[in-house]
Amino acid sequence: MSVASAYSYCSHRFRLLERSSQGFAMAFRLISLRYTGFTAGVLVRGMIAAALVASLSWGGGLYAANQSVQGAKKTEDVGFDGDAPTAILIEASSGSVLFEKNADELRAPSSMMKLMTAEVVFNAIKKGDVKLTDEYRISENAWRKGGAPSGTSTMFAAINSKVSVDDLLHGAIIQSGNDACIALAEGIAGNERIFASDFMTKRARELGMTKSTFANSNGLPDPGNKMTVRELGMLARHIILDFPEFYKLFGEKEFTWNKIRQPNRNPLLNSMEGADGLKTGYTKEGGYGMVGSAVQNGTRLIVVVNGLEDSEDRATEAKKMLEWGFRNFESRTLIAADQPVGYAKVFGGDSRSVKLVAKEPVKVMVHKNGSDKLIARIVYSGPVRAPIEAGQKVGVVRVWRSGAIAVETPVYTAEAIGTGSTVRRAIDGASELVIGMFRAGAEKL
Image (cartoon, rainbow, N blue to C red):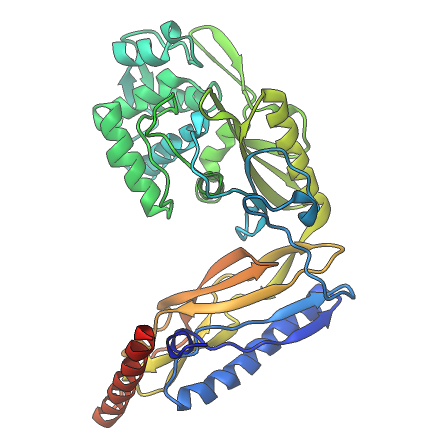
């Protein structure tokens, strides 16, 4: 390991066999305590400990059951045989990824992109900028491009009529109405192009969706419409967790507007127990895709597939992946809420380090009958400069399962750290200067 790498993080490895979820959680906490002691020793030498590595196995085996594939890796290696060119399966509560295949490949999202339009409207309502009772006019543009004359999925809103935001959301989500999305975009931003660039893109970046690009509000063919299944899954999870009152719309099985009754286009609603969302999509460029979600035995999974050749394959693939996830995985708690997970080095403080905790339980989905290799690392930029307030976000604890990131949870300072003496600050400054010189020299090698 180079000096630069050593400065970036220090790691320690342990191996344990555990058979119960309680024992598993305790084992992880014990590792945290051992890591704390290890860190303290490193800190004496003026280095930053930014990583915890733990190999954990249970069920009597030490092999790694790989649940993630990228690119050309064979699905036989992960216990799931999938046909979708791009796919991801996520546990909603923790964000734990159970399966992925080409999850970061940008593709045309088709009507699945309407989730982004819906989220922008949900957020505007939450902030008070838009009301459900507000009415937007169905312009000639919305009518021609997304209404009855368009030959695409439509709400059949009449030209020049005024429709409430509430009804437009029903039309966009349940009927996949392109006219409804355009009307919402024009009503909020003035025109659809501004809505796509200034509202959808900006909001996506705020949510951590760094790759998605938008050229319209509804996913109709345009080279500027690109999303990954990973970011579609992130978006779906956000909607489910942050807008439960609006998420109910995705499970409604039909909606009537202008005396035309249309069923929800989501095939899972009638074919799978616990299914209640979210959105299908199709364009010639993108193929058939779907974002779906279901709850069974208190566990919610989210599936995203894209690039399939027909609608039946889309429905079959999504259902098969969800059933596989429910059948093979269960949730385990690695670290309880407010339980110490490690320490971060402090610069210029009256203490050399600060205790880190996770405000929410750190949970990960693990294979029920097999053995998963878990690696957990505390990742932060340090040292953390004093003064430090209690509850200050410092970094994340990131958990890998069999080589793929399964979950990432923020970590916060558990206590306040005051500014240290002049001597203490001088010593810390000199220490960081020396380490910086070593790091600069190593980088030139």
